[in-house]
Length: 301
Ligand SMILES: C[C@](O)(C(=O)O)[C@H](CC(=O)O)C(=O)O
Ligand SMILES: [Mg+2]
Image (cartoon, rainbow, N blue to C red):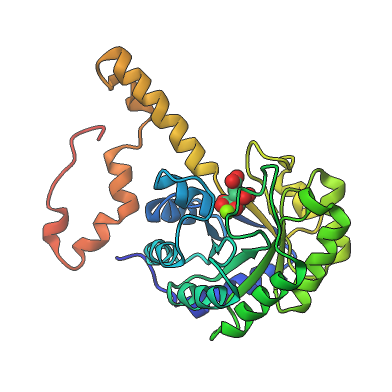
């Protein structure tokens, strides 16, 4: 009942254990708390909270309009329903290095297992678009240092993302990543690498855990989990996959409903009522109050 059994500290330890295991961790982005629960049920090791999805859900572009408190509030709703470690997208840290520090503490309090900070300027954009602007390396070093110092739980994972590949080139991106690790980052997210060779170059240059962003319709090839594991990557990120799938299904459904005047032909593609109730754990609540499950579902529901 009420789904979770573990503390944030346990989940952070679990994330660190997984990152040290040499196995690839598969991390889909949750669209909402319910989908975080589904990610857990389907056997994934961790979940992600994407800045792009959070913004898009509010019908906003991913340009840094959401605030750290808004993201933390959403994160808390997600961490309440899953025992999986959840990594959150902290964009640029939402301002100056002191804002990044505050973000770390807000995200710790939200029960997250870690966050990533990127080296773009505050009016940021998706890492797979052209025309990005970076802050000077020294400013990002300060951002990372402030974030590392702000942690009250040293288990909380601090990941540095560099967007430099598309702006300054691969070598500069690797140099920046090394400086961020020296400043206290536990792990690195090399954004928008062009091919497998570049993924390998990052792995050869750094000995901290690395995340591979397998976002669709972007600049990186969609490498399989097996390939990423062979390359020595620690996390395969699918940040917007569930959101794009859901939106595709919703648009198809709306078209069919409009054209056919009934949703009847869509039923085979819908999650049933009984499956929904199973995920929500209706049955578990009856242990406390038999009135919760004192109904029978119609056949096929
Ligand atoms: C990972 C990311 O930061 C996100 O917010 O999910 C995005 C994903 C995307 O826009 O496809 C990014 O890569 O910038
Ligand atoms: Mg993002």
